[in-house]
Every structure is written in structure tokens, then in C-alpha cells.
Length: 194
Image 1: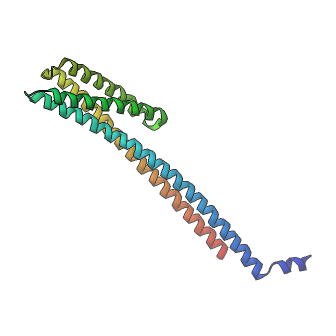
Image 2: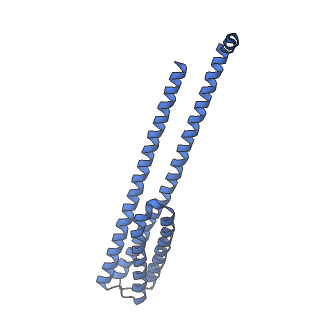
Image 3: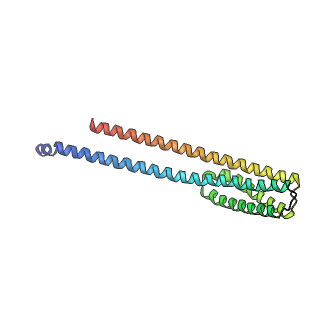
């Protein structure tokens, strides 16, 4: 029996065994790294999508603020500006609706959007009422509306920063995991070749 075992343990068989082990280790490492990359890619796509909503919300709020300022300081015909105000308000309404859908699909954004969406809805209602009445020189009312928009902008800005921090933390974790896998591969290779 020993003689058969001795015949099997030849340099060629030993080399083939080490080669198979290295190939298996390489395949396993590739699988782990690929899975980590897919997870990172999905997280980056979600972060970009959510950050985009935050930036677009800021833009929508700024658009309304700019038209309100124009209406407050202009003595000319307001019809064109009121149309632009209502169009910007419609966009803000659609943005709030889109955020509702994202809020329900993404638990990480819920806390921010639970504060931002009702505020945006209030702004939409107030802009509609202000446009219907046409009194753009009511300084207190316009100032209150602009203050609410500033509050909404602050929430959107904090949201964007939170998504950026989460993205940074995720990338840091992925780099640490990849470094750990690399070290493991080097240890196994050293053990197999040593």
C-alpha cells in the first residue's frame, strides 16, 4: 500500500495539486472581490440617485425663491412671472411626490424625507394660494414662505451631506475588506510556496 502511495506522490502530482489549490484560491478570491464590487456599485448608484434628488430639490426651491423675489421687486406686468412661479411650483410638487416614493423604498433616507416632504407640500400649497390671490407685496407672507424654503434647503443640504458621509464610509469599508482579502491571499500563497 505504501508503495502505491509513494508512486502517487511525485513532483508532477505535487505541482498539479499546488496548481489546483492556487487556481481554487484565485477563483474564490475573484468571487469575493466581484461580490464586494457589485455591492459597492449598487450602493454608489443608490447614493447618486438619492443625492440627485437632494440637489434637484435645492434647485426647485431656488427657482421659486428667485421668481418670488422678482415678483416682489417688479412693478411691471406679473403674468409671465406668475406662470413661471406656478410652473416651478408644479415641479416642486412632482419632486415631493418622487421623494415620497424614494422614502418608502430607501429606509436610510426616511428620517430626512419625513421632515422635507411635508415642508415641501406646505410650500406648494402656500405658493398656490399666494399666486391665486396675487398679493406679492405682502412682505410678511412672502418672508414666511421664503423662511420655510430656507428650512427645506437646510434639510436637503444635510441630507446630501449624510449621503456623502455614508458613501465615504461604504468605500472605506470596501477598501478595508479588499485589503483583508489581499493579505489572506498573500498568507495562503506564502504557506503554499514556503
